[in-house]
Amino acid sequence: GRISAFKKFLSEMLQDLSDPPPTAQALLALLTDAVRLTALKVQIAFTCESMQPIYDLILSFQKQTGGPADPLGALNDIKSAQAEVTRGKFPPGVQKLLSACPAPQAAAQSKVLQQAATVMSSKVDNLHAATGSHSDVQQGG
Image (cartoon, rainbow, N blue to C red):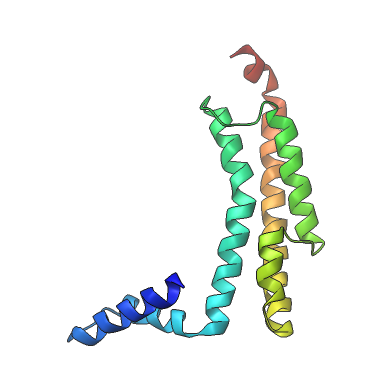
């Protein structure tokens, strides 16, 4: 797909340079390493799926369109989604990528994602506490 086309382009570009930049060489090495590339895809998918509700919530706090009508309810939804991940239940797109991984790699990635969800969950707790204590400001707006 798109990654192999980009890898080919990058490879040809690096061959044409007399002194290729180390970051470009590292990127090509990453794209050529199936295990690391799969890990990257899983982490990007997880980040996208996990962060979208948070972005929607931030937009609603900034009074832009597209945010949830009930910000505190949205925080609770985000928290319960993260709790699912800490128990090893991943969003469908992430689960599909994990299922395609060899078992040891899938287990390692699951552990990384569960740790990330735990961190995000504690951040949501902090945000929830801050929002709860300033709810009068929110309604006064």
